[in-house]
Amino acid sequence: MSEGDTITAVATPPGVGGIAVIRLSGPAAERIGRTIFRSAQGHPPPFATHRLYHGHIVSTVDGAVIDEVLVVLMRAPHSYTGEDVLEIHGHGGYLLPRRILAETIRAGARPAAPGEFTKRAFLNDRLDLSQAEAVADMIDARTERGLDLAQSQYRRQLAGEITALRDGIVDAIARLEADIEFAADDPDAPDAMSIPNRLQEIGREVNSLIASYREGRLYRQGVSLVIAGRTNVGKSSLLNRLLGEKRAIVAATPGTTRDFIEETVNIHDIPVRLTDTAGIRGATDAVEQEGIAMVWQRIDAADAVLLVLDGSESLTAADRQIVAELSGKTLIPLVNKADLPRILTPEALSDLLPNHRALWISAKNGTGIDELLQAVRRLFLSAEGDASTGMRITSLRHKLALEKASFFLCQATARAAGGGSPELAAADLQEALEALEEITGETADEMILERIFANFCVGK
Ligand SMILES: Nc1nc2c(ncn2[C@@H]2O[C@H](COP(=O)(O)OP(=O)(O)OP(=O)(O)O)[C@@H](O)[C@H]2O)c(=O)[nH]1
Ligand SMILES: [Mg+2]
Image (tube, rainbow, N blue to C red):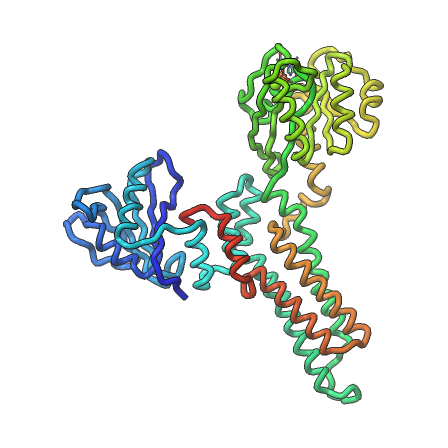
């Protein structure tokens, strides 16, 4: 199936780079190539499929040479989208790729919407929907684990599991229908007892996929941590230590950080958005007050807070006030400056945070940082989770579809086991089947497709 028109986009990120790729997909791809490309011999090449040609993009307005390029035509159906795809490999930069793009539009192509190439690949059966989603996840992956999960989904591991579950359900439906046709006392009737067992087994597999979402989501979307505490305790030093670079200004003057600084780090394969914030104190200066107001907004939105205290000093009223205001928030309490003589006593600490065990660290020399990374990992991953390398679902859409399937499977199992109507059990199984097919896209409607592809970048 083809959408009819021909789409065009710059497929590489804007900015300075060696090469930029402009790609077109659709029935006019070859014609547009012939219009704007001149081979080194001065005429359009034969455009044999999957062959690179060297030449120039020339303006259709005045024949001026726009860029020296390589072009390749990949004829349908052997292309990413399943349609004719033309790729123009030109010089990178801010302006040249835009000029070539403008020429392709002048020659009759339409600017592509986000993810439209991949959407066409899906509509032309080059990819199932879970694979198309995996393409976006591969591009967005921030950690090795996140990438591994996206790639296994792209290689149809999830689609394979869904197909196996579907086959099981189709088989059960067939047997229920056979059951409907045979009278109860017919000696040739299939063994109805094994249907509930089989359905229960399928239900268990569906539920274990649902359970894998908690971690799958973590590897894909990551978590946010805010570094908070009173002034001068070493929050910015901790950010720099975790990033392994001097990103935030560190100074002995309290109130050094005023704005927040956000960076992403990889902690045991979890992409963690870390925010260093202004030290909390009763500031009188308006800029600092504004900075402190933002700290609380950031804390509200974060998954957890790295609460930093200073071990080389006694607790202050500000420490106590911050802890009081953080009640209800997930905390990892850290006592910094462990390299200095310890003034903060264990009694004072357990008095302040009776339900936590604070970790002594030194942002200055690195003491306790590995333990901190472990604590972050433990906070978000179940103890056994990291050891298993099994399949994990990473998308909320997949989880919701699996939950729907699980509900109907459960209902069908109860009917089949309790001697209920086989017609109703079969109808439940049909619903479960459709829910599973939403994942691979057989039954996904246009609204779902639109939402999925809107999250892609233009050119993919
Ligand atoms: N000895 C020692 N000094 C530290 C450590 N961490 C930070 N410092 C010092 O403490 C002072 C404050 O450090 P910052 O990282 O700027 O503290 P902050 O919490 O970001 O301060 P504000 O931005 O003002 O709230 C600096 O002089 C740092 O060198 C540590 O682990 N050990
Ligand atoms: Mg700071």
